[in-house]
Image (tube, rainbow, N blue to C red; front, side, top):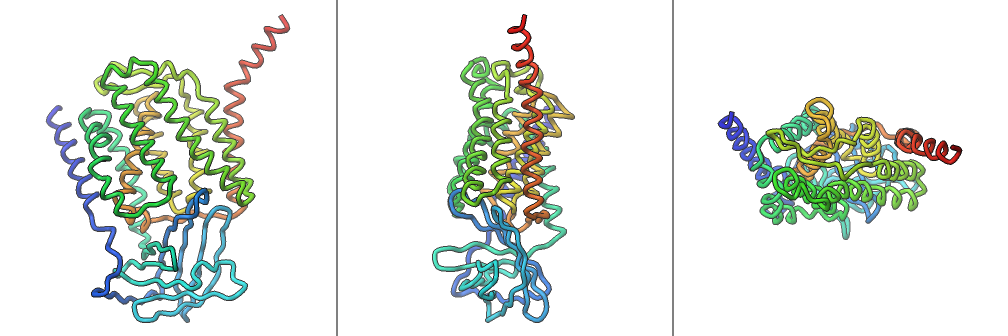
Length: 396
């Protein structure tokens, strides 16, 4: 059994190395390298960081005949598709728009090929990568994220040393690589190091005497509260800046998710071989309500990441529901940290395989309302009995 576990550990480390060292992030165009391709009949997609508090912007370009491209833009409360004329000049694609167009993001911009399936969008002061979209590869990648993170969770449960390698060593060793990709959006960096720090703390809780200390248990719960609070701040920022009711509703759902957390002092490391960190008071209802709130948050603010992040949520929820109850917070930290480390190590892999979800103003409002309602019901189930008990005591 030990040999099998060690083999699994070695194989996982080798997989991580190959993944992080892969060449998906091709270098930008240079003067001595020119690529030219015909985009007619193809679909290209790109994700662009918005301004602070704005989330991200997702673009889908469906190039048709007669030099016409259907441009779709999803960002914040904006969801629209419209046809635009385009032309190719050498190794560049230029998209024009009329004066009354709703999507003018490509005005004055050039998209230059630097690989057969990649272009660099450029305007003064801004640039981002646009990728040729392959449907089968994109759907396979979403499935890969789910399976890969579930395997990562089991690896970290069953092989203690893997936790130290992945959450203590790799975040330091890979920092130069992460910085080289120019990921500038503040929210992504905060999420990366907050979840990696949480996974590191949970490792100490599980395998050292730190798990007996009250501050460590509080820190475990605080990780979750901070994680939710970061997203609530993003939702309020978006909602107030563009008047989006869906974001405001979801932000309130996030607050309800925070105040319904109970009994953090009962967190402990069990005596099993895996030394799992258990939060016995965390109910299945709370986990489901959190999952709804979280996927709505990503759907509203980071449309290009929604499909993949849904798989990240499922990768933590399934083990906590089906393999070992009480381990959701541990699994959430492992899978979320793993997904962010994967993204930072190979952002082009994530961004070139975006699966676009249906998104309209009505769907967004319905999603925000669903998050608000389910977390509201959760709050009623948590606090309702307590309020009734207090009222009964006063009347006695």
